[in-house]
Each structure stands twice: as structure tokens, then as C-alpha cells.
Length: 275
Image (cartoon, rainbow, N blue to C red; front, side):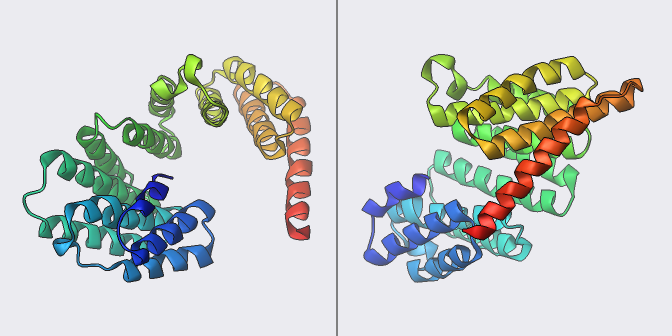
């Protein structure tokens, strides 16, 4: 998280706030979320009078992380509170450089897109995400995140061709350049490929989908990544069921995939409860 770079700035209270917010974002536990929300109050809320450095490197990232945590926990009212606070801060700070203001407006548009998505207002969500894209063309991380949000949005609406286009845009990102891939990024790429395979199956391109999923399943099994292996088995089973529905031909392999998935899933739950 970029939040960790902020602890070199400001007073001890702000350092505590940043660490708490980072903890809330990374663990997504309710207790950590409440700790992050409390930290916002300790950090101070008078955005209009903060020095530029404190606003740019502490206040805004902290509130942005608060909003993103609320989004991942589907806390609608908290997201609205964060959006209102961030909007008031922008209105109160006059004379801001255009580049900074556009970046903040993009953050707000993305946040409002997430709020609309959670309430199933898909037209508004798309409009907000598109507005954020237009404001952040030079921000590779932001555009990457927005293409992911759009892919999810389109998939949920059964706009599979549009979802495929967004996933292809993600895979064309410089971060997935084969010459520069680190392990963590390679894992993200595999996740995007598996999502893309499911979209291909939804489009009736079953052979292509299964040709992607089988090597991924083999890789996860070989490397001992049980959760990713189980999820890939689930996607294989879904692709095979869709193929059976489309062609009318039985796909007994689908039963094997779902059975293995359930065994691994239940084993993971029992393991978690035993910890």
C-alpha cells in the first residue's frame, strides 16, 4: 500500500492514523476498519487549513483508504460520508494545481461509481467510472483499477463482450510485460486470465476457455496454492456446464471439477475454523 510511505510526514497522530488505515485496508476486518475510522478523527478533519504536503500525503490518502475499505465491506453510509467529506475538502481548497484537482476528482468519481455499483445502479456506475478514466489517463495504476471495475460491472450485466474488452485492456498493461514480471504481478495476471476464461465461456468460446483454465489448474496444484486451485476448478466446472447447456452434450468432467472444488473448499473452511 502506498500509505506506508506517508509515515515520514506529519505529527505522531498522523503516523498512527496512517498505520491504522493501512491495517484496515489490508486486513478488511471489522475491528481494523473501526480503528481506521477512529484514526481519521485523531488525524484532524479541517482540510481547508492543512499545508499542501499534509493534505496531499496524509489527509486525502487516508480518507481515500477509508472509502475504499468501506467499499470492500459494502458499507454504503460510510462510503457516502467519505465522499461528502472529500467533496467538501476539494471545495474548500482553492487555488489547487490542475493536475492535483483532476486526480482528486478521479478518485471521487471512482468512489461514486463503486457506490452506484453496490446499489445496482449500473448506468450511473459506468458513467462515473468513465469520468474517472477521462480524468486519469496518465495514471497507470488508476486506469488499471478502473478497467477492472468496468470488467466486473459488465460481467454482472451479462455484457460479456464488453467485459472481455476490459480484461484484454488489463492484460495489455505494461505491468504485465513478460520481461518485467515479478511473482506477485504474475499471480495477478493468472487471476485476470482465469476471469477472462470464464468470460470466454459465457461467449460460447468453450475450447478457448478450457485451454486457459487447465494449465492454470495444473500450475496451482503443482505449487500448492490450494485456494487458487479450488477457484480454478470451479471455473472449469462452470465452463463445462455452460458448454453442456449450449450443445446438449453431457460433460461428466464438470462433476469431477465441482466435486474437487467442494472438497478443497470445505477443507479450507475446516482448517480456518481450527486455527
